[in-house]
Length: 636
Image (cartoon, rainbow, N blue to C red; front, side, top):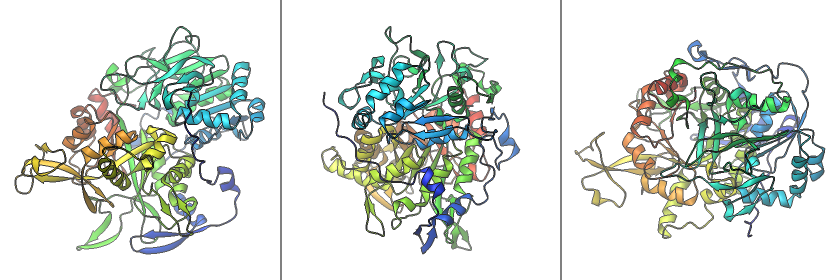
């Protein structure tokens, strides 16, 4: 069968080893709205870490007592001195493997990278994570002559093996992804795409496992309140393997999503694999990793007690509605990286009508850890400063991601600057290379904004066809659609008659226009909302789905910072138009606003907030408690 062309190599980035051992100091220029400054790599790290408290997984963080209620887990695994042992990691360049490495190191293990086929057979314990396209992964394994050693290691079965996500799927006979590709042929069955009427794909978020038999790997997953319902773990995939008579002796757990339950974990002796991502499943996932690495002797403590708000099956079962904490990151006039938040995208302080310095709400790495501890389902970074002159390896967001991924074990998204650019040394980077550098530094997804608008305009001008070269197409082809988030920045554009525009209009009941107009469309903007284009959010979302994007982050300039709640009309228009997840953003001012958008727009998958969390006006926990009381599936 035909196999896809091998992907381009990932651009060189600093590994964790070279970063920690290097004594060289690199210098880059940081460009802000008011000019340029010089920043060294040592200075960047000092700026990012300034004011941070303990970074231990079980350590305390700088947030209020009310946010520490119901702490679900105490991690003791890394309390002892010295390494607990060696584990080999097969990193073939598939997305964010750094988080897997960080999780195992946090648990006290020494990680050894697989560099040759011989290293696989010599491994004492082997972890095989994977993200991206099935065909690309098999191509790389074949090119590096790793297929037969992998098969031999697993078939031998005497030493521990754990696959993660694509690392599970590759164990099967093959997949219909990438036009049909043969797998490792170790588990009977073919991986197929999710099916189901009106099903949102990719399957992104926190879902539960139905554990089929006893196993120390998923011992933590047993919930006293229901023998068949587990604590939620994080999934992100468009394809899945189904249980059948031939593979039933492999199946450890299944998960309900789509037309029928799919295989969420397998185990046969020492060979194990999960469709979900333990490294992105918070403390629950860390315990699963520790169980694997310790052979079922993990000392991590967990409380199975759930709050009273989680007593109903509707709350505990099914794919949870996600609460995402967003951090807008930019340099202030002194060159420090700060988390900021504006009103209608204006992030500067105001004094007597004059614009002051950038509003400073904290340090990005510190706040990311805070929101992880608070129970945020994901953390999103949006870089709103242009670093167009900075070499990619010295971009400040690289350090933000590396440091955050050491202590934040839920998905990380980064946006801003995911496009082709040429640095001050004349070196050109493609958007794929930029994304690859961010994935290698700890990002799970990249968010594309202004570039997506321009890509969509070309898409419609070309009879609704892509050309294969856009950032959306190249990144999704290499890393999978789930790795590409489209950030849309629309504002209401009112019309007296919907026929006056080519873009889809609605009859609004939320807010009439300045002259009483009752029709509006949602105009996409670029350059941080400063320039409007003749394309609507509805049209943009449809184009992006067709080009391979896996998720929509739907902002709203009109509601940004207003605290009036999300724009349900906008969210419903877009969420009902596509079959990929849609995240509502802009306008949250009260915990109830999260429950309302999920209740009024059932097709909305997640909701995001920033300023109300940064200013401690509302906590993530309060939002989730309100959602649970409303009967919404919620990760608590």
